Image: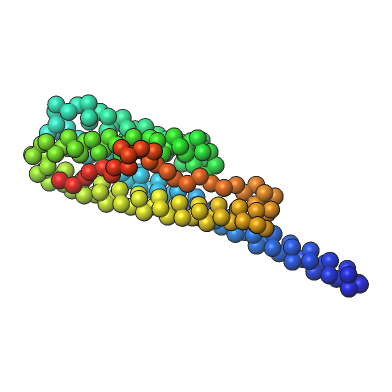
Length: 201
C-alpha cells in the first residue's frame, strides 16, 4: 500500500467514524426529545385526572354556573383526546407540526377554561372554604408548575437537537439520514392564553 492509498484509507476511516458518532448523537437526542415529551404527557394526564374531581366539587356549590363547568369539562375532553392521539402514534408531536399545534391549542383552551372556573369560584365563599377544593386546587397548582418545568426541559432538548441538525458539518449527516429540526412547544398565542390559571383559594 502506497502512502497516498494509506492517506485515503485513513481519511475514509476518520470520515466513517465521524458519521457514526454524529448519527449516534442524533439518535440519542431524538430519544431524549421523545422522553421529554412523555414526561409532559405524564403531568398532563395527572392534570386531566384532577379536573373531573375539581369540577364535581365546584358543581356542588356553583349550580348557577353550569356553562363554566361544562366548558371546563369539554376543554378537558378535547385536550385529553388530542394528547391521546399523539401518544397512540396516530400523530406525533415531534414530526407532525399540525397535530402538535392542535394538541397545544386544545391545552391552551383548557388552561383558559380552568382560569375562568377559578375566577368564578372566587364568588362562592363556601367553595373557597371547602377542604377538598383547597386540596385539589393545591394539587392542580403543583401539577401546573411541573407541566411548565417539563415543557421548558422539552424545549431545551429540542433546541440542542435543532442546533446539532443545522450546524456544519453535522447537517450533512442529518440530511443523509433524514433528521429534521423539531418544533418547539409554544402553547400561547395571545395575552389571554399567557395568563396562568388561578388555582389558589
